[in-house]
Length: 501
Image (cartoon, rainbow, N blue to C red):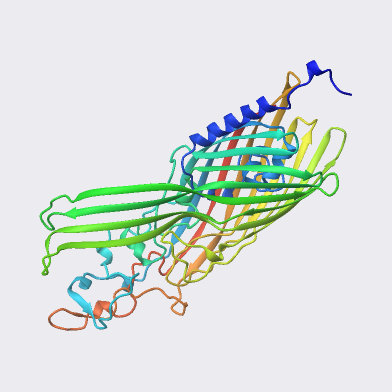
């Protein structure tokens, strides 16, 4: 039956304009973002089922995890907060007394005078190191704010959304460290490879989803990743005189888009099968250091050195996930959804913070999740979710100290929603998750493929050419020698408010 002409409405144009204006405003407020290791670690942290967000979504996290799930939700806006604490532990095994590098390193030279490789240093006496072994504290607390919005341009057929995650106590963090003996010069500590600075980065993503047929939905999205280039020009006016150097730093930052996609099938009522794909992401930085020393060399040219370094932060692998969920009715008042996902994460091409591939290759891993969501009277939501993630890091019996542990996590949450004026849907909720890092012990081995470096090679004293007795055997300041243990836990607690219309 057609409406009288005077009552016919132009289909949704003002509504579309309003949604576009809001989401473009959010997008324009965004600055270049980083990769997504926070979400890779804790999932959709402010939902009852954070680990299963690629197949079950109770909020606008679908914008990032699986855009097609936006089509099954009422459009709306959400703001949420969560707190994350990782309490990590590193146990350092006692060093043998003869492993220390003595002060004789300053007054001797190696018998084998072959030039050192580019990743090797001259020996530094253990007593001359600025920090004691294990000075770094891996315990950290971080607070996050999430702002996200989704809209239906064509009801149940075409949706668009934006998602922002903002760490409130450190908008962006990039902290390099070495995974071998070179770290002695800086923190002189071991570090968890997949925590720390990776957990303090801003994220911005947007996606669109459509449903070409009742049984299939398609979605694509983009996450912004930050690429930076720094040039530091330094003039040293007087070595040994105490004069301060003159420094002129230059920094440029640009954003690149990292794609992701999703396909969801609904072959029968209640069943969903989804696959999601997230391309690898990282925040690379190229650093140039130009140093001029006051004076001239023998040719009359100024003393000038220039070096270029590459760094890679917040590196996350390519991920391909397959998930399935089943929604059924327990009683007249109770509905339930059970879900499971299986993910392939390609860690085998991982690059560390110095943009190097580990000498002992990492392995791809296959995180799994399983959970259940209960809905009571279509107003109360209660979730229980679990995950197991096997570490991609191989046994570190050699020179390097990449630290990571297998993780087992469990999460729960509660949400309540209610209608206002029979049109608007308001909801709020709380969530909590706990992840246990399964303890791991590592012992260094002289038979490793890339063993711990003997930093103070057999040497002789300058002038007398007498052998240096303290250089006999293996001496190293590698913080991981002769072994270490790692364990810990991670928890996240959050709350959110959502308005849907």
